[in-house]
Amino acid sequence: MATQQQVTFSHYDTAEYLQTEEEIAAYLETVMEENDPSLLAAALGDVARARNMSKLAKDVGMSREGLYKALSGEPDSVKPAPTLPLSPPASIF
Image (tube, rainbow, N blue to C red):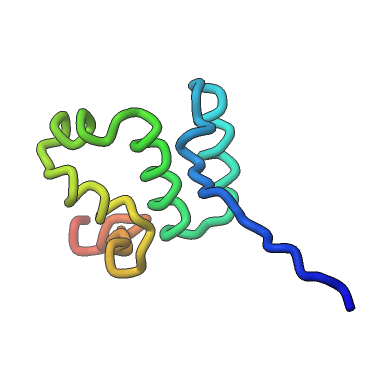
């Protein structure tokens, strides 16, 4: 009878691997190709954590917790952008 080996995994955090501007740019470019607002919000959260979330929160005038929530990628935190008309309404002319 075969014995079972216990497998353990370490915690993976993308923010730990985003160390240069080039790495961040490549990461965001790849994420944007997916055209997924939740994924983009989560990726921006990764970048913010890599760059010091507390300082960013202070710089933008939000609480750290609020910024974490906004950049979590959770469906409730991602709001669709308003749809803007591509041409002016006829009433302007």
